[in-house]
Image 1 (cartoon, rainbow, N blue to C red):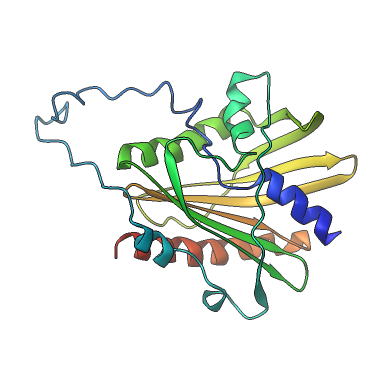
Image 2: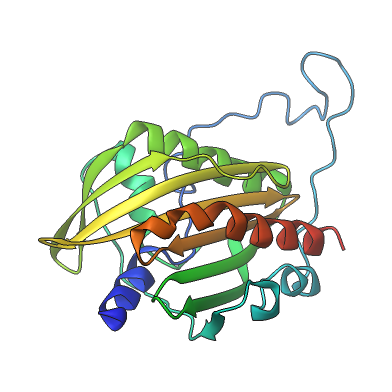
Length: 235
């Protein structure tokens, strides 16, 4: 069961360009050419530089950061591409891949506990803070627009549901959601996901609880990961 769950998580919750191809594509940046804030006439804040490799490494969780009982596991990955016919669901389909257009992955770590819970943490950087901000805000747009949908993955139809959840507010922006995928009749993978922005960097934390009653542990684990990422990005 654990290997089946891990395979599904690797396919579904690897780091992604969630809003790059859809949710962020329609955003506008009025006044970008002038470098002035539209309402005040003051100069707009300078765009943050990409995070360095050292900053991203410093912001990635290690097993010593976690409560007792967690251990490092091989990090999963997937090169499959999910598809959907609904434009509003397309950002969630992009979430099913681990290729990020416009961003650089700086670290990918996965942990497991004795009950088969899984915690995955990825850190990556965009070229500037605008790209990172659009990434995070676009997640909320996608979840609101496509609470229920269906993805085609490796030729299989996979029903999904997405909903916003409460989560710790860390960094310069956060979005949190619970994403459920019905991998087969009666077999569901449910993950709590937190995305955190700091400057041009973004971290994504995915927690797959086992048993489901341990969803309650998400806040503490997400805060540990988010706080470490922010500290690393500011170092």
